[in-house]
Image 1 (spheres, rainbow, N blue to C red):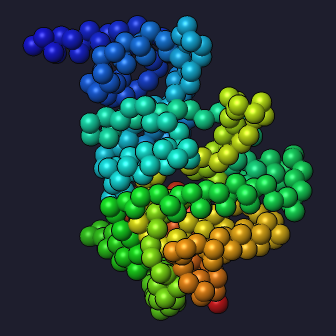
Image 2: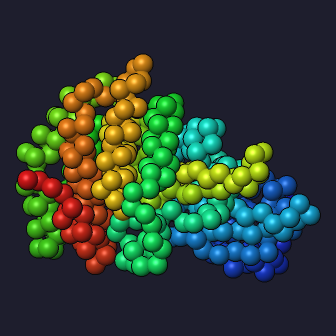
Image 3: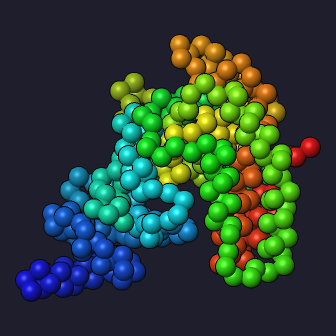
Length: 354
């Protein structure tokens, strides 16, 4: 009885903070239930602004602006939906903390007992990476406002550093080969309901690529020496350009940091390279520079992940990336066809099966 009364009192205190009162009731309940008393009290005392950052299929993210004697601090409150079939929250947190330890992920301040609730550092980008390098946004600053020298190697240096650094992280417990990913998605495409003719037509398109896909998987297996840590979704939206305002040199160096480790696994290193090449709006010169830098780095490793045939498999890896995106969209389309059948068509059209 006392714990229930305490919870009700804490809930009331949260509601008395006008900023926090704007959160959904279920989120407030999670804060009251899971945040340690000291952290909850500090949040109630300091939070002055709340806004929704994003609401995806597997989580919601809120920006919390906190004002204290130490100044203004921004945090991200992330609320995960129920355990999803495509990710392990335990592996996600372990991977996040490993990347954080080497400075390539925001600080994770708090993780709930069941990984339902995260509090982390908010990375304020001086120039949003996704606005410059997202290939598939409807309107990007790169295309319309900001003129970027297409020969500049600055983005290539950032991306290459991310690939090199992540590959060296401890291997996640979850292991996923290209064939395993295909088989897992195929199982999820089995449905008891009678799908629409359009959905069935999309499934036939996927199945028509079976022979091609097996060829891609086989070729990628043959160029693999050993799996590495893989983020598996290095799109521009999962990379943040972080500015170090507290550099001892007096300069303000920037570096890319990663978020959303939901898909992280021990897997084929070409898949991370492919996800960058597929989703970033790089010029031809930048594309080739990234390839050259990546394979030069591989060749100089004392224990390389890939053999000399890997460069010939980059196209196959990019095809695998778009194939899995299309299959994921078709899985999602079982419950939300209006949205995800359009995504399916977009992703499937990017597969080069010739």
